[in-house]
Amino acid sequence: MRVPVVSGKETSSSSNNFKIIKSGRVPRGDRVRLSFLSFELEHHGECRWDFLEVRDGGDSSAPLVGRYCGQESPPEFASSSNQVLVRFKTDWSVTHGGFRLRYETSEEELFG
Ligand SMILES: [Ca+2]
Image 1 (tube, protein in one colour):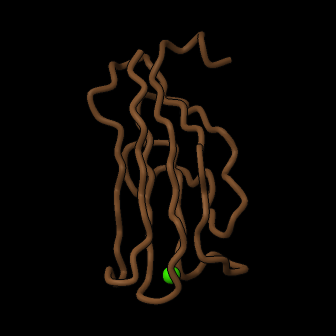
Image 2 (cartoon, rainbow, N blue to C red):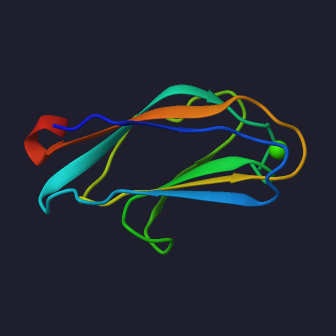
């Protein structure tokens, strides 16, 4: 099992910065689990300015699991396939600490 940690930091210099974290090289039949180690994004009621999106699949048309902002960590997530997409967007103003997440892959039965 590989357990990389992925992090994204908000910066005020990056206008409309989209960061795509896509699962790659995960064997077919395996699943991806994301757990958040830290999370602090600019808050907005509809997460319009800065947000992190999780999708259960490999591209932007995959089912949306959730869009998150503010300081409440997203829940742990296990994908239904070997692909997951995380999109991180920030705007030009108001900067917070960003996020760190752990990215684990494993055979299906280990992620109940
Ligand atoms: Ca911002």
